[in-house]
View (cartoon, rainbow, N blue to C red):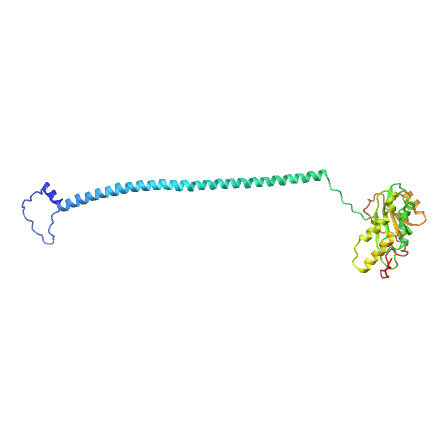
Length: 319
C-alpha cells in the first residue's frame, strides 16, 4: 500500500535552502514526517480505527448490544420479570384476598351465630322464667335433744289460732300402729306422708318416710313400700346388715310401726284429731308454709324424757 500511494501521489522535491546554523543550547529542528507516518497513522490506523472500531464497535457491537441486550432486557425481563413473576404475584395477591375474605366471612358467621344464640337464651328465659328457689326453715317434730314436755306444749300451741285456713300438720302417736289403721286417724283428710320406725331396745333403726298420693288405699299399702325401701338401702358393715334384715322382716309382717302421719287440715279439724285416743301430739305449720319443703322428725313412742335416739350398743335380734 505504501508503494501504490507513492506512485499515485509523488512527494514534491525540496529545494535546497540556506542552512540554519545550529544555535548553541538548542536542539536541531526535526522535519515533520508527513508521508509515511502521516499516511499510515492517519490513513491506515485512522481508517482501521474508524472503520473497524466504528464498524465493529458501533455497528456490530452497538447493534448487537442494543439489539441483543435490548431484546434480551425487554423480552426476557418483560417476559420473565413482568410475565411469570408478575403473574405469580398477582395470583398470590388474589389468593390472599380470597383467604382474607373467607376469614372475614367466618368471623361474621361466628358473630351472627353467637348473637342469635344469645337472643334465643333471652327469649327462652322470658318465655320460661326459672322457678324461684324455695328456702324454708319450717320443721315438724321435736328438735334433737328437746325435752318431750316442752315439745308437747309447743305442739298444742300451734293449734290455738282462730283461722280456718288449711295447714300442714304432723300427727305423733302414743304407740305405733299398723298401716291398716290410717283411716281411723286421718279423718278422711289429705294424707301426704307416712313415717315408719321399727323399735329395738338400744339399737338405732331408721325412720322411713313414704310420700303418699291422695287416696286411702294407697296409704294403707304404704307399709309394704317402706319394707322395700329398707331392703334397697346399702349396709356398710355386719351390724348394719343385721339391722336392715330385722327391720325389713318386721315391716313386711305388718308390725305396728307407723309412728307419724303428715296431713293437711284446718285448725278445728286438727283439734278434733288431737282428742282421739292414741294421738300423742299434733303440731301444725303456719298456713303459708310450702308443701314438701319442711323437715320432719316424729316424736317416737319410746321417747319419754328427751327427743333423742339413745344408745346404740344393744344386741341385734335375728328377727
